[in-house]
View 1 (cartoon, rainbow, N blue to C red):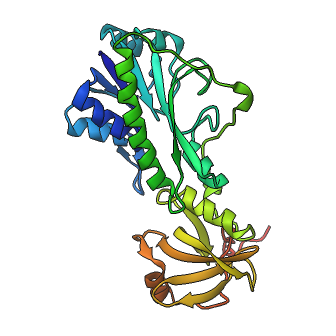
View 2: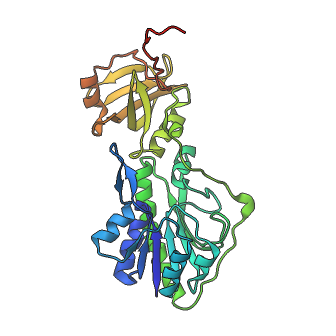
Length: 324
């Protein structure tokens, strides 16, 4: 089949890699290089890096629905456009440029968790089940008819990174199964029940901040939902501290939310939440590498009773000596 792959994040990499073994795409389309890191140097996304490393035909348009984009893709006469975590909508003319239109690999059991952050949403809610849906793209966000769908259990030890990896492998498997169906013509679809739809949104920095006044399970779910990247964080004085791995303890809280209850040798330290304590196992101080919580506390010299803050510290400007 004549395929064009359109994606940006790591979620789409297993599918792209499997396509290379069976139906190499005519073109890989992804986002332009964006400023990243402390120095804000332009950096390619995961799909662009992979495509370049395999010397695949790569295109990074600013506007995928612009006239030049439509002309370039239409010229290739594709059978199917395959999108996976691209970060942009495909317009009607672009979808019509392929014989079978455009499909999307989505990491949720649609119609649940439409939108930009379905994996994070499932972990934040504490779900025990998720999955992958491949559906036909339409003008409505993640609302097109379903072509294939499969469930995947969320393991207690899963965080965002591990769950995304498992879902991306499942998406790659489902894509190959679906392409086999396309070889005999366009496969049947199942319409989504729009009355059951739920939506997610793009993440804000405030979503990453840990609120120790919440129940321990809710705090744990937030840590899992953002680990390993970008990482949920708290404040220790003027410095942020990412909490990357934790577990709930049976002991009830016995101090202020956010206060350290105990230093546990060779393991980490426990922190009070609204109802129970949370054992912190892995952290990342600002500007430093990931480390286990025991090693961190040795250098940081944490003490029982010390308080982590849920809010960024307020800084006051020094008095300039000028009078009003």
